[in-house]
Amino acid sequence: MAEKTRYSQEELEEFRGIINEKLEKAKEDLQLLVDQLSHKDDHGTDDTSPTFKLLDEGSEVLSREEINQLAARQQKFIQSLENALIRISNGTYGICRATGKLISKERLRIVPHATLSIEAKNAQG
Image 1 (cartoon, rainbow, N blue to C red):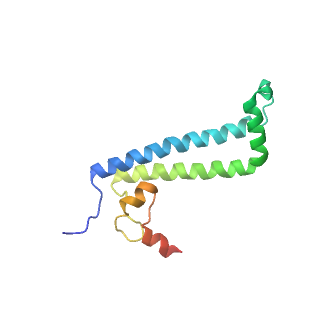
Image 2: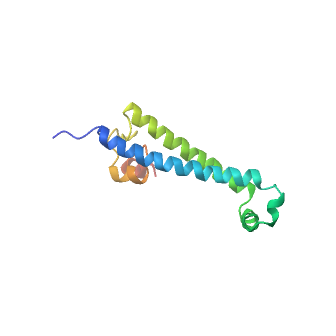
Image 3: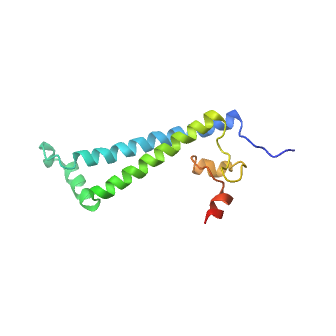
């Protein structure tokens, strides 16, 4: 039997579901970071609320720069997930860009935006 070169439509739909779940969560996480950045200097009536105190203490630990870096990483992750959805649509999802072989289902379930197989990733060093 010939080696499989593409995932079936059913398999792609499974991956689409995984990616959409991760995408939704990633967008929520990004919004939390953006909200933290935009409300950090807001000293209105929220000053007396317990949540403000917690955020204030947390913001001492995470500087604005660190939050910006986290937000940038989150945006990059979101873009990678959206690119994976495009690859599902155009039929190239799950194909290693280095070897041209299928990336294992196990890897794609854990890292659904992967574009390299484990072998190719390890070869990169």
